[in-house]
Length: 280
Image (cartoon, rainbow, N blue to C red; front, side, top):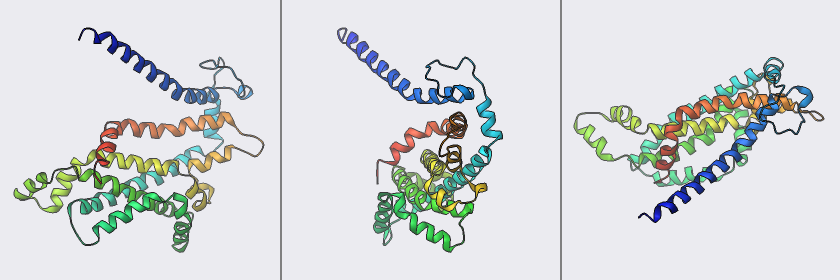
């Protein structure tokens, strides 16, 4: 056992050095974006590798907020992403329970259909989704883009939650039923609290899907006052000139809501993804 300790220390040292190298590799682009955002306008194309510019300024942050509609873009993205995430989790939480706990005719066919929707690329459903939204007169509305996002979010949420629900022992529900609890009470007071990790991770993934989406938003949201941040950032890039300072500052501001959401849901991230994928 004594001879294995030096080998273990060497192995741990190699692992730590590798993790440090990977962390630096990941953080380097973020640091460069921050460096460009802090540079004055006449030094945006500087190739210096200093950690922070000697003449750092917050002018780019002020400009992107005051001269552009960044706050409006963020507000639109938050409304659409949060509504899509909440709608996807709400529908999937009940649908997945039925698919996990009940046996009925067409259940397997429904699961196969839900799985097949995950194999289709988003662009394959674009024309059908747009025609449906156009028929409903929901182009250039929050509801239209939320429906477009939910078409993909709901089946994905059902598939993840159904796999997680299968890991919850049926004995818990049977014990509650023996104690006199009804089906609705068991679902809302016992089952859903136990599924909190999966619900949290599905909410996060649905939020990220709507937060970063560009293509559907570009087609459905044609009014400037409804633009989300992916649409808004394209206005900072012109045909012959790109405001790299404003672009970098806006990118950092846009990352704040996502970082905050990840911090609140980080404890559910690993368990929700792992347990939800164990059983189909």
